[in-house]
Image (cartoon, rainbow, N blue to C red; front, side, top):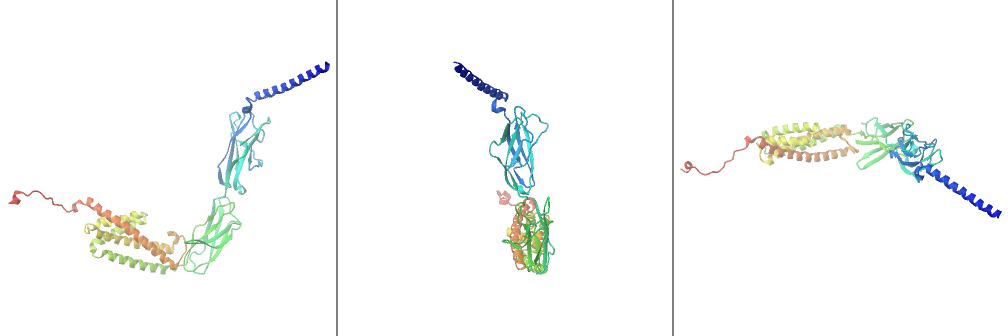
Length: 421
Protein backbone atom coordinates (compact mmCIF):
# COMPACT_ATOMS: atom_id res chain seq x y z
CA UNK A 1 0.00 0.00 0.00
CA UNK A 2 2.81 2.32 0.82
CA UNK A 3 4.47 1.80 -2.55
CA UNK A 4 1.18 2.30 -4.36
CA UNK A 5 0.52 5.61 -2.61
CA UNK A 6 4.10 6.71 -3.18
CA UNK A 7 3.90 6.07 -6.98
CA UNK A 8 0.64 7.97 -7.17
CA UNK A 9 2.14 10.95 -5.38
CA UNK A 10 5.16 10.90 -7.69
CA UNK A 11 2.93 10.98 -10.80
CA UNK A 12 0.98 13.89 -9.42
CA UNK A 13 4.23 15.73 -8.71
CA UNK A 14 5.51 15.30 -12.26
CA UNK A 15 2.17 16.35 -13.68
CA UNK A 16 2.34 19.52 -11.63
CA UNK A 17 5.84 20.30 -12.90
CA UNK A 18 4.73 19.89 -16.53
CA UNK A 19 1.70 22.11 -15.97
CA UNK A 20 3.92 24.71 -14.34
CA UNK A 21 6.22 24.71 -17.38
CA UNK A 22 3.33 25.17 -19.81
CA UNK A 23 1.95 27.94 -17.64
CA UNK A 24 5.34 29.74 -17.64
CA UNK A 25 5.59 29.52 -21.43
CA UNK A 26 2.08 30.88 -21.72
CA UNK A 27 2.88 33.80 -19.43
CA UNK A 28 5.99 34.61 -21.50
CA UNK A 29 3.96 34.54 -24.70
CA UNK A 30 1.41 36.92 -23.20
CA UNK A 31 4.23 39.21 -22.14
CA UNK A 32 5.46 39.26 -25.71
CA UNK A 33 2.12 40.76 -26.85
CA UNK A 34 0.45 38.15 -28.87
CA UNK A 35 3.05 35.53 -29.86
CA UNK A 36 4.85 35.96 -33.19
CA UNK A 37 3.74 39.56 -33.62
CA UNK A 38 5.69 40.52 -30.54
CA UNK A 39 9.13 39.64 -31.91
CA UNK A 40 11.52 42.04 -33.73
CA UNK A 41 11.39 42.31 -37.51
CA UNK A 42 13.59 43.55 -40.34
CA UNK A 43 11.94 44.60 -43.60
CA UNK A 44 12.16 46.93 -46.59
CA UNK A 45 15.79 46.28 -47.40
CA UNK A 46 17.06 48.27 -50.41
CA UNK A 47 20.11 49.88 -52.00
CA UNK A 48 20.36 53.22 -53.85
CA UNK A 49 21.44 53.67 -56.52
CA UNK A 50 20.93 50.21 -57.95
CA UNK A 51 23.93 50.58 -60.28
CA UNK A 52 26.82 52.95 -60.83
CA UNK A 53 30.52 53.12 -61.62
CA UNK A 54 33.07 52.06 -59.04
CA UNK A 55 34.06 54.96 -56.88
CA UNK A 56 30.37 55.68 -56.32
CA UNK A 57 28.84 55.42 -52.86
CA UNK A 58 25.89 53.04 -52.48
CA UNK A 59 23.49 53.43 -49.54
CA UNK A 60 21.85 50.36 -48.00
CA UNK A 61 18.78 50.79 -45.79
CA UNK A 62 16.57 48.48 -43.73
CA UNK A 63 13.68 49.09 -41.33
CA UNK A 64 13.81 47.57 -37.80
CA UNK A 65 10.76 47.20 -35.56
CA UNK A 66 10.14 45.73 -32.11
CA UNK A 67 6.69 46.09 -30.50
CA UNK A 68 8.30 45.95 -27.04
CA UNK A 69 10.73 48.77 -27.90
CA UNK A 70 13.77 46.52 -27.54
CA UNK A 71 16.62 47.96 -29.55
CA UNK A 72 19.15 45.89 -31.47
CA UNK A 73 22.11 44.59 -29.54
CA UNK A 74 25.40 46.47 -29.74
CA UNK A 75 26.93 46.48 -33.27
CA UNK A 76 23.63 45.40 -34.86
CA UNK A 77 21.98 45.39 -37.38
CA UNK A 78 24.68 44.21 -39.76
CA UNK A 79 24.74 44.04 -43.51
CA UNK A 80 26.23 41.13 -45.41
CA UNK A 81 27.48 41.92 -48.92
CA UNK A 82 28.20 38.88 -51.05
CA UNK A 83 27.81 36.75 -47.92
CA UNK A 84 30.51 38.55 -45.92
CA UNK A 85 29.94 41.00 -43.10
CA UNK A 86 33.51 42.39 -43.00
CA UNK A 87 32.73 44.59 -40.01
CA UNK A 88 29.93 46.47 -41.79
CA UNK A 89 27.85 47.91 -38.93
CA UNK A 90 24.82 49.94 -39.84
CA UNK A 91 24.16 53.40 -38.40
CA UNK A 92 20.90 54.94 -37.22
CA UNK A 93 19.41 57.12 -39.91
CA UNK A 94 17.84 59.28 -37.19
CA UNK A 95 19.85 58.99 -33.93
CA UNK A 96 17.22 61.05 -32.07
CA UNK A 97 14.54 58.43 -32.70
CA UNK A 98 14.49 56.12 -29.63
CA UNK A 99 11.16 54.48 -30.35
CA UNK A 100 11.51 51.27 -32.39
CA UNK A 101 7.88 50.23 -31.98
CA UNK A 102 6.89 52.23 -35.07
CA UNK A 103 9.85 51.42 -37.35
CA UNK A 104 13.40 52.74 -37.23
CA UNK A 105 15.63 52.94 -40.30
CA UNK A 106 19.27 51.89 -40.29
CA UNK A 107 21.68 52.62 -43.11
CA UNK A 108 25.15 51.81 -44.38
CA UNK A 109 27.15 53.79 -46.98
CA UNK A 110 29.43 51.63 -49.12
CA UNK A 111 32.24 53.50 -50.91
CA UNK A 112 33.24 51.15 -53.72
CA UNK A 113 36.74 50.49 -55.03
CA UNK A 114 38.17 49.03 -58.26
CA UNK A 115 37.90 45.48 -56.95
CA UNK A 116 34.15 45.90 -56.40
CA UNK A 117 33.34 45.96 -60.14
CA UNK A 118 30.57 43.48 -60.96
CA UNK A 119 27.18 42.31 -59.60
CA UNK A 120 26.59 41.91 -55.86
CA UNK A 121 24.00 40.63 -53.38
CA UNK A 122 23.15 41.61 -49.81
CA UNK A 123 21.03 40.83 -46.77
CA UNK A 124 20.54 42.23 -43.24
CA UNK A 125 20.81 40.50 -39.86
CA UNK A 126 19.96 41.69 -36.35
CA UNK A 127 20.14 40.37 -32.78
CA UNK A 128 18.60 41.87 -29.64
CA UNK A 129 19.82 41.95 -26.05
CA UNK A 130 17.11 39.42 -25.13
CA UNK A 131 18.46 36.85 -27.58
CA UNK A 132 16.02 37.16 -30.51
CA UNK A 133 17.34 37.46 -34.06
CA UNK A 134 15.94 37.96 -37.53
CA UNK A 135 17.09 38.77 -41.06
CA UNK A 136 15.86 40.45 -44.25
CA UNK A 137 15.09 38.75 -46.51
CA UNK A 138 14.13 35.76 -44.41
CA UNK A 139 16.01 33.49 -46.83
CA UNK A 140 18.47 34.17 -49.63
CA UNK A 141 19.60 37.69 -50.49
CA UNK A 142 18.67 40.76 -52.47
CA UNK A 143 20.37 41.37 -55.84
CA UNK A 144 22.42 44.52 -56.18
CA UNK A 145 24.10 46.80 -56.61
CA UNK A 146 25.69 46.44 -60.03
CA UNK A 147 29.06 48.20 -59.85
CA UNK A 148 30.24 49.15 -63.34
CA UNK A 149 33.45 50.29 -64.94
CA UNK A 150 34.57 53.88 -64.56
CA UNK A 151 33.34 55.87 -67.59
CA UNK A 152 34.96 59.25 -66.87
CA UNK A 153 38.17 58.53 -68.77
CA UNK A 154 39.76 61.42 -70.67
CA UNK A 155 42.19 60.68 -73.49
CA UNK A 156 43.98 63.72 -74.88
CA UNK A 157 46.31 63.49 -77.86
CA UNK A 158 48.02 65.91 -80.25
CA UNK A 159 50.47 65.72 -83.14
CA UNK A 160 53.64 67.81 -83.13
CA UNK A 161 53.68 68.59 -86.88
CA UNK A 162 50.25 68.49 -88.56
CA UNK A 163 51.61 69.57 -91.97
CA UNK A 164 54.76 67.51 -92.54
CA UNK A 165 56.58 66.61 -95.71
CA UNK A 166 55.82 63.08 -96.90
CA UNK A 167 58.17 60.65 -95.14
CA UNK A 168 58.98 63.00 -92.27
CA UNK A 169 58.75 61.61 -88.71
CA UNK A 170 55.77 62.89 -86.74
CA UNK A 171 55.10 62.39 -83.04
CA UNK A 172 51.74 61.80 -81.35
CA UNK A 173 51.73 62.52 -77.62
CA UNK A 174 49.12 62.88 -74.93
CA UNK A 175 47.86 61.67 -71.59
CA UNK A 176 45.10 59.57 -70.11
CA UNK A 177 43.38 60.50 -66.86
CA UNK A 178 40.19 60.31 -64.83
CA UNK A 179 38.73 62.85 -62.44
CA UNK A 180 40.67 61.15 -59.61
CA UNK A 181 44.02 60.18 -61.06
CA UNK A 182 46.32 59.76 -64.04
CA UNK A 183 46.25 56.23 -65.38
CA UNK A 184 49.53 54.36 -65.58
CA UNK A 185 50.31 51.22 -67.58
CA UNK A 186 47.21 51.44 -69.78
CA UNK A 187 47.30 50.34 -73.42
CA UNK A 188 46.95 53.11 -76.05
CA UNK A 189 46.37 52.35 -79.73
CA UNK A 190 47.03 54.81 -82.57
CA UNK A 191 44.81 54.14 -85.56
CA UNK A 192 44.08 55.73 -88.91
CA UNK A 193 40.46 56.49 -89.73
CA UNK A 194 39.45 55.07 -93.10
CA UNK A 195 36.19 55.20 -95.02
CA UNK A 196 35.51 51.54 -94.19
CA UNK A 197 36.76 51.53 -90.59
CA UNK A 198 40.10 51.99 -88.81
CA UNK A 199 43.63 50.66 -89.26
CA UNK A 200 45.93 50.09 -86.27
CA UNK A 201 49.24 51.86 -86.97
CA UNK A 202 50.90 51.64 -83.54
CA UNK A 203 50.48 51.10 -79.82
CA UNK A 204 52.14 51.94 -76.51
CA UNK A 205 51.38 52.16 -72.78
CA UNK A 206 51.01 55.13 -70.45
CA UNK A 207 53.80 55.95 -68.02
CA UNK A 208 53.41 56.41 -64.27
CA UNK A 209 51.87 59.85 -64.86
CA UNK A 210 49.46 58.74 -67.59
CA UNK A 211 51.52 60.18 -70.50
CA UNK A 212 52.27 58.38 -73.76
CA UNK A 213 54.20 59.01 -77.01
CA UNK A 214 54.01 57.40 -80.47
CA UNK A 215 56.02 58.15 -83.62
CA UNK A 216 55.03 57.59 -87.24
CA UNK A 217 56.41 58.31 -90.69
CA UNK A 218 54.18 60.78 -92.57
CA UNK A 219 52.53 59.05 -95.55
CA UNK A 220 52.34 60.33 -99.14
CA UNK A 221 50.27 63.29 -100.29
CA UNK A 222 46.78 63.50 -98.83
CA UNK A 223 44.78 64.39 -95.74
CA UNK A 224 45.16 61.68 -93.09
CA UNK A 225 42.93 61.28 -90.04
CA UNK A 226 44.26 59.66 -86.88
CA UNK A 227 42.97 58.98 -83.40
CA UNK A 228 44.33 57.60 -80.13
CA UNK A 229 42.14 54.97 -78.48
CA UNK A 230 42.02 53.25 -75.11
CA UNK A 231 40.20 49.92 -75.65
CA UNK A 232 39.04 49.61 -72.04
CA UNK A 233 39.89 47.09 -69.33
CA UNK A 234 38.39 45.49 -66.23
CA UNK A 235 38.00 48.84 -64.47
CA UNK A 236 37.61 51.54 -67.14
CA UNK A 237 35.36 52.06 -70.14
CA UNK A 238 36.90 52.59 -73.58
CA UNK A 239 37.78 56.13 -74.62
CA UNK A 240 39.24 57.86 -77.65
CA UNK A 241 40.73 61.20 -78.53
CA UNK A 242 39.41 63.72 -81.02
CA UNK A 243 40.47 63.36 -84.68
CA UNK A 244 44.02 64.46 -85.49
CA UNK A 245 44.79 65.63 -89.03
CA UNK A 246 48.09 65.18 -90.87
CA UNK A 247 47.97 67.15 -94.11
CA UNK A 248 50.58 66.50 -96.81
CA UNK A 249 48.59 67.89 -99.76
CA UNK A 250 50.04 70.20 -102.39
CA UNK A 251 47.45 72.76 -101.31
CA UNK A 252 47.87 75.52 -103.94
CA UNK A 253 47.78 72.97 -106.76
CA UNK A 254 44.65 71.19 -105.51
CA UNK A 255 42.76 74.43 -104.83
CA UNK A 256 43.83 75.99 -108.14
CA UNK A 257 42.78 73.01 -110.25
CA UNK A 258 39.39 72.76 -108.53
CA UNK A 259 38.79 76.54 -108.77
CA UNK A 260 39.43 76.54 -112.52
CA UNK A 261 37.11 73.58 -113.09
CA UNK A 262 34.20 74.92 -111.03
CA UNK A 263 34.56 78.41 -112.56
CA UNK A 264 34.35 76.89 -116.02
CA UNK A 265 31.36 74.75 -115.03
CA UNK A 266 29.43 77.66 -113.52
CA UNK A 267 30.29 79.90 -116.47
CA UNK A 268 28.90 77.38 -118.96
CA UNK A 269 25.72 76.87 -116.89
CA UNK A 270 25.09 80.63 -116.63
CA UNK A 271 25.59 81.12 -120.40
CA UNK A 272 23.14 78.31 -121.17
CA UNK A 273 20.56 79.65 -118.69
CA UNK A 274 20.77 83.22 -119.98
CA UNK A 275 20.43 82.24 -123.66
CA UNK A 276 17.73 84.41 -125.25
CA UNK A 277 17.13 86.53 -122.10
CA UNK A 278 18.15 90.20 -122.26
CA UNK A 279 20.83 91.12 -119.76
CA UNK A 280 18.70 93.94 -118.39
CA UNK A 281 16.04 91.37 -117.44
CA UNK A 282 18.28 89.13 -115.32
CA UNK A 283 21.33 91.10 -114.08
CA UNK A 284 19.73 92.96 -111.15
CA UNK A 285 17.50 90.06 -109.93
CA UNK A 286 20.36 87.56 -110.09
CA UNK A 287 22.89 89.75 -108.29
CA UNK A 288 20.41 90.90 -105.66
CA UNK A 289 19.08 87.39 -105.03
CA UNK A 290 22.61 85.98 -104.82
CA UNK A 291 23.73 88.67 -102.33
CA UNK A 292 20.78 88.11 -99.98
CA UNK A 293 20.98 84.32 -100.24
CA UNK A 294 24.74 84.23 -99.64
CA UNK A 295 24.42 86.49 -96.57
CA UNK A 296 21.70 84.25 -95.11
CA UNK A 297 23.85 81.16 -95.72
CA UNK A 298 26.77 82.77 -93.92
CA UNK A 299 24.67 83.38 -90.81
CA UNK A 300 23.44 79.78 -90.82
CA UNK A 301 19.99 80.09 -92.41
CA UNK A 302 20.47 76.89 -94.43
CA UNK A 303 17.87 76.13 -97.09
CA UNK A 304 15.92 79.26 -96.02
CA UNK A 305 18.72 81.36 -97.51
CA UNK A 306 18.59 79.50 -100.82
CA UNK A 307 14.79 79.69 -100.87
CA UNK A 308 14.94 83.44 -100.20
CA UNK A 309 17.41 83.95 -103.06
CA UNK A 310 15.01 82.24 -105.46
CA UNK A 311 12.01 84.17 -104.14
CA UNK A 312 13.76 87.50 -104.75
CA UNK A 313 14.74 86.53 -108.30
CA UNK A 314 11.24 85.30 -109.10
CA UNK A 315 9.60 88.40 -107.64
CA UNK A 316 11.91 90.82 -109.51
CA UNK A 317 11.98 89.06 -112.89
CA UNK A 318 8.44 87.79 -113.43
CA UNK A 319 7.14 91.15 -114.74
CA UNK A 320 9.48 91.23 -117.75
CA UNK A 321 9.53 87.43 -118.04
CA UNK A 322 6.03 86.16 -117.19
CA UNK A 323 6.66 82.71 -118.67
CA UNK A 324 7.76 80.32 -115.93
CA UNK A 325 10.50 78.81 -118.11
CA UNK A 326 12.24 82.18 -118.31
CA UNK A 327 12.08 83.31 -114.69
CA UNK A 328 13.17 79.81 -113.58
CA UNK A 329 16.20 80.00 -115.86
CA UNK A 330 17.04 83.38 -114.38
CA UNK A 331 16.72 81.96 -110.85
CA UNK A 332 19.08 79.13 -111.80
CA UNK A 333 21.78 81.69 -112.50
CA UNK A 334 21.55 82.85 -108.87
CA UNK A 335 21.83 79.24 -107.70
CA UNK A 336 24.98 78.74 -109.82
CA UNK A 337 26.59 81.80 -108.24
CA UNK A 338 25.71 80.49 -104.78
CA UNK A 339 27.21 77.13 -105.73
CA UNK A 340 30.43 78.78 -106.89
CA UNK A 341 30.89 80.92 -103.78
CA UNK A 342 29.97 78.26 -101.22
CA UNK A 343 31.98 75.45 -102.83
CA UNK A 344 35.11 77.58 -103.12
CA UNK A 345 34.85 78.40 -99.40
CA UNK A 346 34.27 74.75 -98.46
CA UNK A 347 37.17 73.63 -100.65
CA UNK A 348 39.47 76.17 -99.04
CA UNK A 349 38.64 74.96 -95.54
CA UNK A 350 38.83 71.30 -96.57
CA UNK A 351 42.33 71.74 -97.95
CA UNK A 352 43.76 74.02 -95.25
CA UNK A 353 41.52 73.28 -92.23
CA UNK A 354 39.89 69.83 -92.70
CA UNK A 355 38.61 69.73 -89.13
CA UNK A 356 36.44 72.79 -89.79
CA UNK A 357 34.36 70.88 -92.38
CA UNK A 358 34.24 67.67 -90.34
CA UNK A 359 36.36 65.39 -92.51
CA UNK A 360 36.23 62.03 -90.70
CA UNK A 361 38.40 59.70 -92.79
CA UNK A 362 41.70 59.77 -94.65
CA UNK A 363 41.78 60.70 -98.32
CA UNK A 364 44.78 60.77 -100.64
CA UNK A 365 45.39 63.69 -103.01
CA UNK A 366 44.18 61.80 -106.08
CA UNK A 367 40.85 61.17 -104.35
CA UNK A 368 40.37 64.72 -103.04
CA UNK A 369 39.04 65.77 -106.44
CA UNK A 370 36.51 62.94 -106.35
CA UNK A 371 35.31 64.08 -102.93
CA UNK A 372 35.05 67.68 -104.14
CA UNK A 373 33.18 66.89 -107.35
CA UNK A 374 30.74 64.60 -105.54
CA UNK A 375 30.04 67.45 -103.14
CA UNK A 376 29.67 69.87 -106.07
CA UNK A 377 27.08 67.75 -107.91
CA UNK A 378 24.96 67.15 -104.80
CA UNK A 379 25.11 70.87 -103.93
CA UNK A 380 24.14 71.81 -107.50
CA UNK A 381 20.96 69.71 -107.26
CA UNK A 382 20.24 71.11 -103.78
CA UNK A 383 20.62 74.78 -104.76
CA UNK A 384 18.72 74.60 -108.05
CA UNK A 385 15.81 72.75 -106.42
CA UNK A 386 15.31 75.22 -103.58
CA UNK A 387 15.96 78.28 -105.74
CA UNK A 388 13.36 77.06 -108.25
CA UNK A 389 10.78 76.59 -105.48
CA UNK A 390 11.59 80.05 -104.15
CA UNK A 391 11.30 81.62 -107.63
CA UNK A 392 7.82 80.19 -108.13
CA UNK A 393 6.74 81.46 -104.71
CA UNK A 394 8.18 84.91 -105.46
CA UNK A 395 6.39 85.07 -108.81
CA UNK A 396 3.11 84.08 -107.19
CA UNK A 397 3.50 86.74 -104.48
CA UNK A 398 3.96 89.56 -106.99
CA UNK A 399 0.35 89.42 -108.21
CA UNK A 400 -1.33 90.24 -104.87
CA UNK A 401 1.46 92.62 -103.86
CA UNK A 402 1.50 94.56 -107.17
CA UNK A 403 -2.14 94.60 -108.38
CA UNK A 404 -1.58 97.77 -110.49
CA UNK A 405 0.67 95.81 -112.83
CA UNK A 406 -2.10 93.44 -113.83
CA UNK A 407 -3.73 94.14 -117.23
CA UNK A 408 -7.48 95.13 -117.09
CA UNK A 409 -9.89 92.60 -118.55
CA UNK A 410 -12.77 93.48 -120.90
CA UNK A 411 -16.31 92.36 -120.04
CA UNK A 412 -18.78 91.76 -122.89
CA UNK A 413 -22.25 93.41 -122.51
CA UNK A 414 -25.35 94.35 -124.48
CA UNK A 415 -24.90 96.71 -127.47
CA UNK A 416 -26.14 100.33 -127.03
CA UNK A 417 -28.45 102.21 -129.42
CA UNK A 418 -25.62 104.53 -130.42
CA UNK A 419 -23.44 101.59 -131.19
CA UNK A 420 -26.20 100.04 -133.27
CA UNK A 421 -26.65 103.25 -135.28
